[in-house]
Amino acid sequence: MTEAEARAWVEALVPRETVEQLERLVAIVLDEMGRQNLIAASTAEHIWARHIVDSAQLLPMAPDEAASWIDLGSGAGFPGMVVAAMRPGLHITLVESRRKRIDFLSGMADALGLADRVTVAGCRLEMLDSAAQDVISARAFAPMDRLLPLAHRFSHPGTVWLLPKGRSAASELDAARASWQGDFRIEPSLTDPDSAIIVATKVQPRGRGPKQR
Image (cartoon, rainbow, N blue to C red; front, side, top):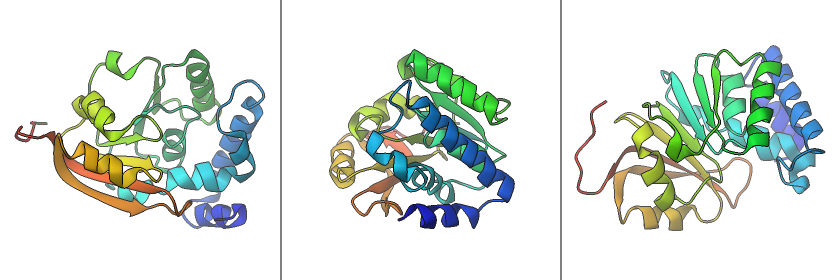
């Protein structure tokens, strides 16, 4: 996907004011690159395809009625901040433990006018108080067999897990299935033929019945 194609894809989905908000997001990330390594330098010239669309493609996989979304290891705000800009009805929790990234994300939420429904949880996931979320996303956070035990306490029976992965998607899912059960599927990525998205619901440790919401 080229940058022009990525821009066109976004513009077909959201109103002009949201596109302008995403343009500000892109400018903020690129400006900050001189101070901290938010994204790989090799992807900076392709930020709309590699980061904006790569984040936004998760939205059609999330329930329309979702009200809460937690993004683990948010880093530069992908996908969480993009989701917040494109889905106004959601409250987004961005989990990030690095001090400079925490400050960056908080400043970005203010600059984009999203601070009223974006919470930056500045701590390690293990230290965060659990609250059930309608959607859990994690982009390059941890392999599934480590991620699921860490994040399961933030889920309820209807939670949708959206986990962008590279070539390891199938092998990670196979490894996780040894200890975890649920409805799992792998969706192709729009932005990279070598990448995929693991979509999961009803995720439970094997041998345990459904947890109550």
